[in-house]
Image (cartoon, rainbow, N blue to C red):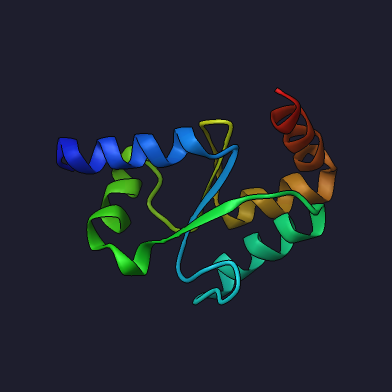
Length: 107
């Protein structure tokens, strides 16, 4: 990953409380895993932003290196990597996600 791509990712993550790197957009997810994450966050009724990795191959590859996580989507909460689709489902089902999001949005 180039320093420019790393800086771009750093800036995106620092600008948003909740940020999802995904295939497609929150209005039109382009894969089932991205759709799962969008549905989960939508159900919480909180504001969030998305980055469509299909629009930018450098970001698509760079985010995998950035987080040391091989798959997309990737969710960042308050600048920290939270996980992908499976982790989001698990956190949602246990109620832990709602708690983490409330704390993040309050800070």
